Amino acid sequence: MEESPACARCPYRLSKRLCNIEDGKGLNSCPTRKKKELLAESMRLYENPETLKFAREASIQEGEGYQRLGMKKVKPVKPRILEIAEFSDKMGYKRLGLIFCEGLAGEAKAVDKFYTSKGFEMVSVVCKAGRTPKEAIGVRDDQKILSGTFEPMCNPIYQANIVNEEKVDFNILMGLCVGHDSLVIQHLAAPVTILAVKDRLMGHNPLSAVYNIDSYYAYLK
Image (tube, rainbow, N blue to C red; front, side, top):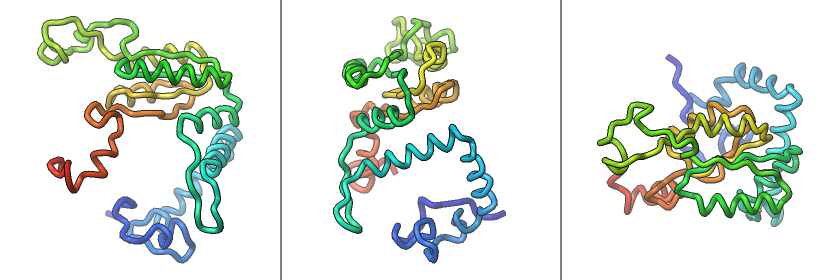
């Protein structure tokens, strides 16, 4: 069988890779070299006017996230929370959905206030909306966070259906659990972006463990 793409294992410097320069280097499995027919098929999908606008504005937003300091130097100038607002403006979005975990209720309040101050209509839904017991999806009492208590389930499908019904233009995910985020993305009608992900131990910054994988968190390997 043909080797699967393994871009994460590419040993060449970014500036020397085939995905960045015409005569660049790559592994035998490099998709830039090996999957040209699939690339052409993928590029045809950008012929859809809505898809083309979304992709173009996202690329423009990427460029605007930097200040140019000469030919080969740039520095970042915007946080993600602002980039989401600017991208939404570019796309003409007026109504945003904020889908969040109750563990980030304080942060959600601040985020809601921020986007409202930028002129957006906000629809926000917490993960525990509906107050449905975990038993409804087969969770045993000993599998709860606190056994012997009532615990409402996180209900990402319900969250998705609420913002779908509210006809939001664009969705923002913040702090949903692993798996719950997958379900909500699967059921959303409008496009979605991620403002923050859940990492209880790392203060919602999962890359902290990655940055220290060879030192403090070597036990994870």
